[in-house]
Length: 380
Image (tube, rainbow, N blue to C red; front, side, top):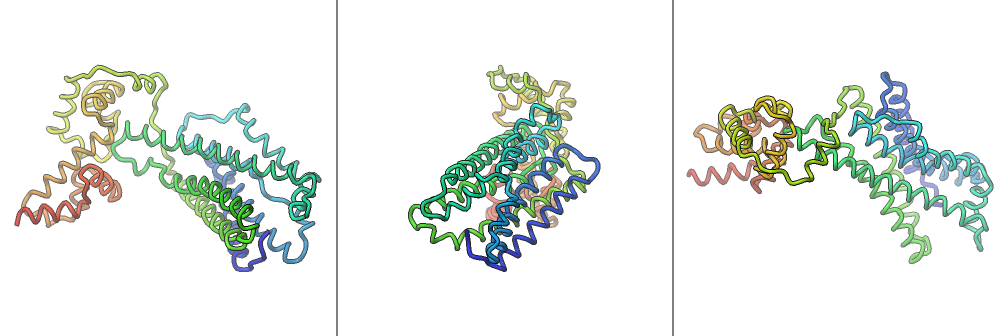
């Protein structure tokens, strides 16, 4: 264990308790939706881990570690399932948690019981004895299994998030209100935390005989407490604003059919191109696949296949490509300086500055500012 550090310990307590508060608010807020429950559990489990470390340092300072062994707060096996089911719930509104899914949380119940046995109390304390207590390998095995559980579920959650992003781009031209990029950040941090923590502790144990622990132990959990508090704050704000990302309704048969090579439909492709060129449907910032399908009197599947096969793009790239070209055309017109670049972007159908900059740079290799400066030099 690390030496007591009043400043870092206080920071962990403050952010950890704030995270517990956000978790409680999410649980009591009505309506009590499925994603909200799992987010509250996720925040609670991570907050308990951070508070656990702070409590260790306080009790160690007063030589009360024997008391801590009876009030262990850490619940490693709850983190992974909570993260996975939260991600699954928010990326798929049709998902319903069933009794069968409760099996994923059985390990956390076993873990809670384990911490109330002599295997934990003697095994954990015995790590610092020479030789270690016979129960120590049992305690270490439980800890490593907990870390493995978190790692596996985190990978599954990330797969869901990236798959969700792919589906969004097949159905929407603007992703700002539906994207879950805010969730990717803490998920990736959580995944990186355990990978980095495991590597660092092993290097410290085998190469430095645990002499580096004071420099990374408390700072790492301080960062974890801050990120967890931020996740709770962000999740609570989203629930207050009722901004719940909606995943596109894609049935399995339609999704699997995309994997098969479909024949091109030049008639529908030409119809889509003419619709964009003549009616300029891309100027609608809310344009999505269902709306476009209605305009050409075709099914969503037919329109999606036509875009994929004939233009070799997804819906997001297809629509925003016309918006970028419209912006470039406006930059060649006299008097374009009377409006800001962002103003021109909005006139072309973009809905946010971040999306505009990202799409423009990806499609042209230049930022909007770089492109306009280049065009200005050519015209001089």
